[in-house]
Amino acid sequence: MKRQIIVTSIVEQMKKISNANGFYSEAGKNVYEWMSKPLDKDEYPAIIIRDTTDNTTDENQILQHKLKIEIDIAVNNKDNTTWDMREVTSDVLKSFGILEDTLNYECSYQGSDSLVEHKADVYGGVRLEFTVAYATGRWEQ
Image (cartoon, rainbow, N blue to C red; front, side, top):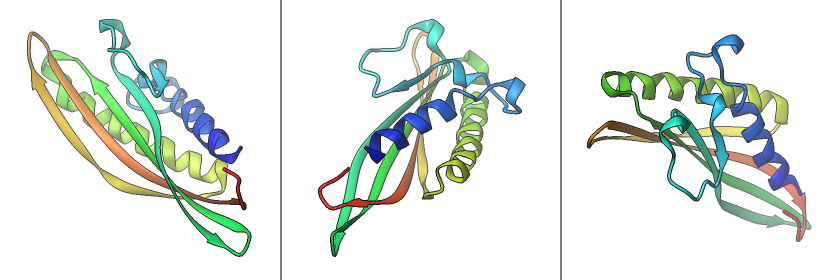
């Protein structure tokens, strides 16, 4: 199942985000696939990965897939929240570039949206969108 292999590869690559591996942040400590519960205070910064849409075209027994990947970044660091958002975003982009070389599939970056919320603490979030193009046999994922 190529789709699951791709998603698992993304999760594993994002887990490598650490200062020791040449990244700005330690966000690789908290990487989740389709997380379904609120984050605990010790789970920031976090990276949450979802494979939300698979657009396909049928080309004579071969399916051409364009898998949409959403990567959410969650940050909570008081006065440095926006700075941390930018660092983790940079780390995710760098990591996805490394992944593209590993997967040998065409990957594209579709942009991002950001949000900062001021409550008892300051929370920040960024959603980055990517597309991974790959082919399978007909009726396969």
